[in-house]
Image (cartoon, rainbow, N blue to C red):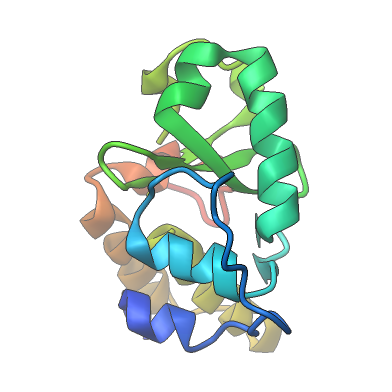
Length: 164
């Protein structure tokens, strides 16, 4: 329970596009796993709060980002969103997937962005919540898994499923 999935496991859960995009001139040089996803798979909802953009939506969102903040758009690539206005971004240099809480307001600086493995932990939690309330030990395991990605991350993530 609450296993941190490998990239291969994650890609194995996705629905392929009808045709793989071969002309990738509009997509910057990014992490190979993400490029495999965006060029070869359909967009997907991981949880209702975590939606990965498909190729066309990623292009639209990143054009918008470039118009909002040149500094941020040069460093980050917008890959997804929540239904509440939050965003998921890939760091073009480090390859990390980062989260942006829209309650912070405008994109001002890189430290505002907080990790896609996190999304799949939340997916597991939501699947469990669809069946039953988790036991206290399961809540502890979930929080521990989130915090293994980055110490204190559970407390920073804005969707507070449980009291801290």
